[in-house]
Each structure stands twice: as structure tokens, then as C-alpha cells.
Image 1 (tube, rainbow, N blue to C red):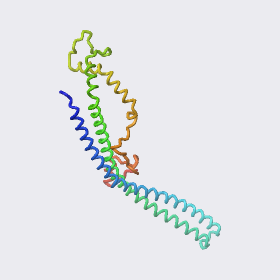
Image 2: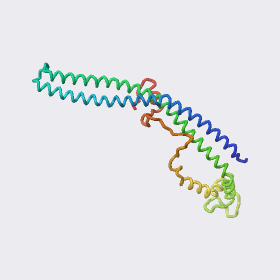
Image 3: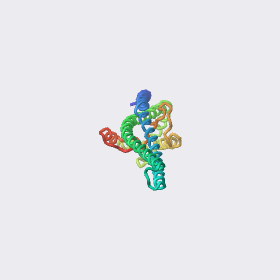
Image 4: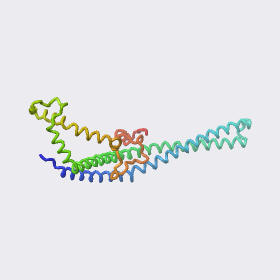
Length: 246
């Protein structure tokens, strides 16, 4: 049966078009929903964390100042400097505690947002991988359309050229005893072509690292780092009221 490369190329292009549409939907859903909400909450938590550290430092400094003033005033609580230092210490400690409570509440909210963002991120990542695979296949069939016939003719010729390194060759030219042996013999005869293509592919920059394909865009999860992305099991746990620490 003749291989219909035109049909396969059209099917590959159709699959690519569908994959790109799916990718666009997944990217839009992430970029306009859980992604930015998680980023905003994460930034707020980080800012609050810095404020807590500053408040705790102030509380420590205020406590030292109180101890010094209290001792200097003869350990009399009615001393103005002592009372001022005490008020400063109490205020700093109270503010730090309020912020710690808020930070703990924010951590739970951030966990819930991480679960939702992770769910959408998994969908986005899967769509991106499918789109890249569809692109690679479409490019492959495009090349087969352009140069496949010439390569195929070379392989057809090589199929009848005995290979000195093959254990299935017969010095008298007799045909192998089974179709499977025939396939192995032909594969050995084709090896120099396939090995050449392999070596050429390995010499290209696209082989060493996945290239950035313009039509796919950049896969970007924003503030959701690899460490933030929860596994499906962790997402399920969070949604059931448990905690999966980021």
C-alpha cells in the first residue's frame, strides 16, 4: 500500500491547529484566573513576612530599651522613661502578633489558591506539550512532503544492497526464510542512511535543547514556581481541607 504523505500532512496540520487552539484556551484560563490571583496573594504574603521581621526586630529593640530604662530608673514603673519604653515594647509586640495571625490566615488562603493555580497549570502544561508534539509531527510530515521521496528512493535502492555486517546476508543471494528475517536484513542495509540522519540531527542546536517555537509562545506560570506547583494528590488533599506545605 502506498503511503499517502499528503493525507498525513493535512491531518498533522489539522491536529496542530486544534492543539494550538487548546493551548490558547488553557493559557488564557491560567493568565486570567488562578495565575494572577496566586501571584497577588504570594506577593502580599512575602510583603507581610518582611513586615513581621521588621516588627519583631523593633520588638526586640524595644524590649532592650525597656530593660535598660527600667534598670536605670531604679526599677520603678512610674518613671516616665520606663513607661515610655514599656509602651513602645508592648505596641511592637502587639503589632507583630497581629501580623503573625494575619500571615497564618494568609498562608491557608495562599494554599487554596496554589491548589487551584496548580490545577490550571497542569492543564496548561499538558496543552503546551501536546501543541509542541503536534508541531513536531507537522514539521516531520512537511519534510516528508518536500524531500521524503528522494530519501525513500535511496532506502529502496539500499534494500537490495547486501550489508557485510549483517548476519542475515546469504553469500549465494538466497532470500531469508521468513518475513521477520527479511525485515532485519533490510534494516541492516538501511542503517547507513538512518545513522547519517541521526548524526545530522544530533549536530543541530534543536537536538541539544528544545527550541522556542514562535507559534506556541512562551510557557510561563508567572509567580507559580516549580516548587509551588502541587501534585494532583496534594491538590486533592488541600481541596478536602488538608494542608500541603508549599
